[in-house]
Amino acid sequence: MFLLKPDQSYERVEDISAAALRAMGVSALLLDIDNTLVSRASGTMPSSVNAWVAHLKASGLALCLISNNWHRSVFDYAAELKLPLVHKAMKPLPFAYLRALGKIAAQRKQAAVIGDQLFTDVLGAHLLGIRALLVQPRSEADLWYTKIFRRLEKRLGR
Ligand SMILES: [Mg+2]
Image (cartoon, rainbow, N blue to C red; front, side, top):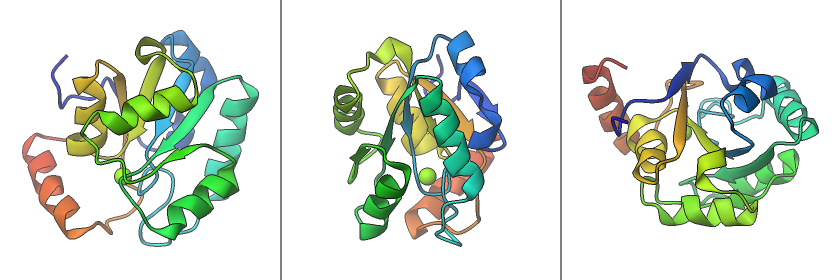
């Protein structure tokens, strides 16, 4: 697998059903937060995302949040969704992915990472041989270094 090429691409996380994940052999998800679940511009969890997480949980999928963010907000999101969290993840480095898998007792081959960035979420997943599902960012608001990566993503024809 090309390290920066997502295995699947979607508009939003809500477009990814538990049945589609099962069909891919996925029973565990590592979820990015910023601009994947929550718009960086609004900072509020959409009710559709809350409902999507509830749908996946009810379908028996194991979920863990994994975020490079270290601010209080990520703990609030984890509490709101009642999900385990690995923060300060330093994606694309592998350590946090492995910790997140350990938290939900999942193997790499049964897992998928869902995120909005090629150079953190997708690259980090693929360095460990984990499937990577890419979604469109929920807002244009990004950190300064993310904006640099966005320019590189555009060059790759994202
Ligand atoms: Mg993100």
